[in-house]
Image (cartoon, rainbow, N blue to C red):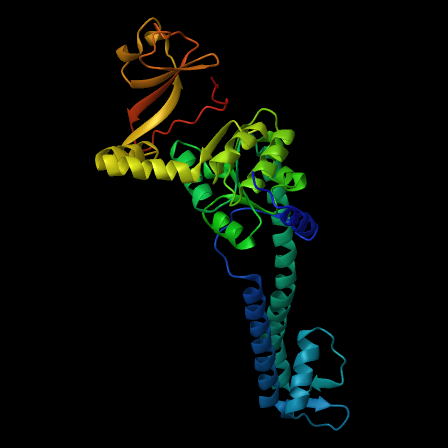
Length: 365
């Protein structure tokens, strides 16, 4: 495995500067700055409108300093009146001015206060609500799926798992890019911004309570560090990782991954199969795309199948998992099916009838 020393040192130095936080899915709302700007504009319009109303009837007001009210005095009076300061140096003296103060300026004062105080209360309420949502999310999150990396591989992995029945609320995406996490939350997933090689970032994703972990990072050395950290935090989770170089797959398995997919080699094999037989390539692509056409699923043996051969079941059995052995359907060692066996079968996908993947690691030979 190639692990340049200067890259590691640079990344470790950068880790201390990276901030991380949890982002939960939310409804599409206006940006906070836009909301504040809109409310300030409304408050300004109320202030200007009040000043113009006062100026239109300036003869009905008295200024203690010069006994006349001009446009500047009107804005001054509107400001101290709407803010409930009320110095008393400018007062309405005519009946019309007092009538206007009662039925026009007083409602405008209430509206002005609602706009300003409401903005502050909304900000505080929003923070409290988000904190409450975050605490509730942490307390209820159990047996979920953590996906490290939301690129093409990570996104496709989530879509495949969700096609089997997993809810989006049970998926947490970890990525160092805030824009990537914004895209993930827009799709309905919870997200954690930060470097997944750090244990405190993975703890924010509740990795220690996760059911399965998908590692789809851009670099193989990062995948190894993430697998080591995740396995240290959670000994029982199923960890599946993708690597670019096939020579790094054994090292990733030693780091704690239960299954390792070599993305470049897998794509190359599919290309080679498509060259030899385009139809076979289409069938293989259909099998790995859950939720449509044919699906490959793992399921337990039911009582009605005990004592039968793999070919006597209703589903097309391709592999029998017995203990720590993975046996082909035609392996003489299979004999008849046992209640403790698990089967890898090919079935016709039924929309809306997802099958949740098994939580246990796939046995090795």
